[in-house]
Every structure is written in structure tokens, then in C-alpha cells.
Amino acid sequence: MDQLDNRDAIREFLATRRAKLTPKQVGLPPGTRRRVPGLRREEVAVLAGVSTEWYVRLEKGHISGVSDEVLDAVARALRLDDAERSHLFNLARASKRPIGARRRAARTTIRPSVERLLASMIGTPAYVRNARNDVIACNDMYKALYAPLFDDPVQPPNLGRFTFLDPRAREFYPDWEGAADGVVALLRTEAGCNTHDRSLTDLVGELATKSSEFGIRWAAHDVVLHQSGKKEINHPVVGLIEVCFDVLDLPADPGQYITTYSAEPDSPSADAMAMLASWAAPALDIDNESAERR
Image 1 (cartoon, rainbow, N blue to C red):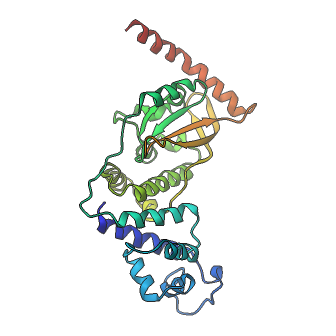
Image 2 (cartoon, rainbow, N blue to C red; image 1 turned 180 degrees about the vertical axis):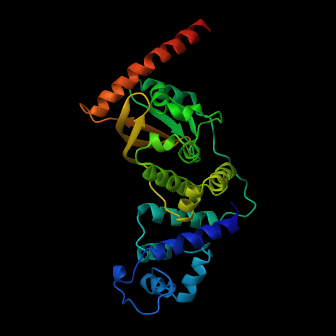
Image 3 (cartoon, rainbow, N blue to C red; image 1 turned 135 degrees about the vertical axis):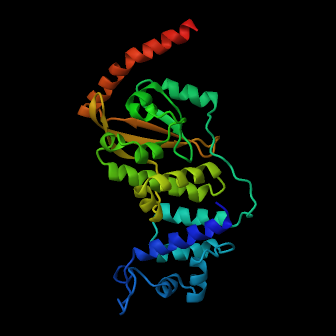
């Protein structure tokens, strides 16, 4: 993604946020003869306290050199949430990088100490992902929980590819629409932070080419702060599990994150998780015995 692509992302992001607002929501008269939904550019300019000409230039992607104060004013005018505001600032920072800046690929390895940390979480499914949503490392419980993900011969396993290209994902995620929205919003957020990541750009291109449902969601420019939440999983062996997830940054490894899953104590999901551990145990024992023989 070069600087020209970054301007496209800025333009489309601001335009989609503007389209989501109505004059009534921001205290403006409705006016007449509206040809498109949402606010007009001149209305956003008024709300942000800038000239219409200036805002039009900004929405065309000319964001380099714009002060944080002005970006804050635009964010307030467009009623951006925390994730959207952060995304706007990330796009602004990316626009300041030279066009010929070196492209960085998402890392697909982890440090040994992080690997040991994952292994120590015996009863907790946990994995490390990168900006592309590659599962670059995980413990045995996560591999048991997300068993269908690891059937794909393409390595490392990728959550975006699984969600949109594997037919089993629709059964695995009871709320597939929500899971799909979340995956795309997370990739869009990472794209704002990692504009020089060729591997991320390639993945987006692959998914957009192979899945129209991905392409529609990508064009919406929705973003998310993926920190904690709940999801349901329909496991092929133990059935329905509702899990809470928590995401931890790895400050020493920029672009890598640990995600852990847990079930509410004394719940049917906790019982299902215990069954999952029992189901996975024989296979894990075989793996351990093989390792010891080696």
C-alpha cells in the first residue's frame, strides 16, 4: 500500500463515516434536495470549524501535515468512536512516510519465552496472532478448540481465510455474520497501522478476490479495538461453547498479540471446555510420548 493507496483509504474512510450521520443527529436542519445519505462535506466543515475547501481537500486524502487538533475536531464532528479516531490518526501518520518506504512483512515466528508462556496455560486456550490474523503459535487447548482451522494445508493457519473461504466456518461460528464483521474490521484496523506490510495487502487482495462477502465488508471501512469480548463456537465434538476472550499486546514484539479464551465458571460452557480437554488429552499424550522417544 503506497501513499496513493493511503489517500484512497483516507478518502473512503471519511466518506463512509460522513454517510452514517444525519443532520438531525448532529443538530443541523435537514435541508432539501439531498442526493446522498448522511452529511454534506460543508456540514462537516461547519461542525469541525474549518473551511469547506479545506475539508474537501482533507477528504481527498491530503492529510499530511494536518495538526492533531484539527484531526480531533474532524473526529468530533464525525462522531468517531475510539477505534475510528485511532484509525484516522494512524492513516495520518502513514501519509507522512515516503512513497519508497520499505515494506515490512508480518512476522510468523515468536520468541521462545512467549512459546513457553503459551505452553504453561494448560487449561486455557491461547494463541499468538500477527497483523494478518495468522495463528503463528498456540497451545494444545487452542488447537483442540479450533480444530477445523488446522486442517488447512496452507500454513500458518489464518483466521480470515478460514472465516471466508472454509465452508465449515458457518457452522463453527453460530453468529457467522458477527464473526465475519469482526475479522474484517480487525484487518482494516491493522491495515491503517501497517501500510507498508506487503503480506497484509496480499491477504486482503486474496480474500477480496475469492469472497464477495469479504469485499463488501472491506469497502465499509469499519474498524475495531479488539481487546475483549464474547463469542460462540459450535465445536464439532463437544458442541456449543460460549467463551470470553482477552487480547494482550506483546510490547517487545510489535504487531503480535496473545489471545486467551475462558468460560464462565460453573456454566455449561465450562463443562464443555472440560470435555474438550478430556477429548484432546489422548492425542496430546501421544504427541508427548513421541517427543520423549525422539
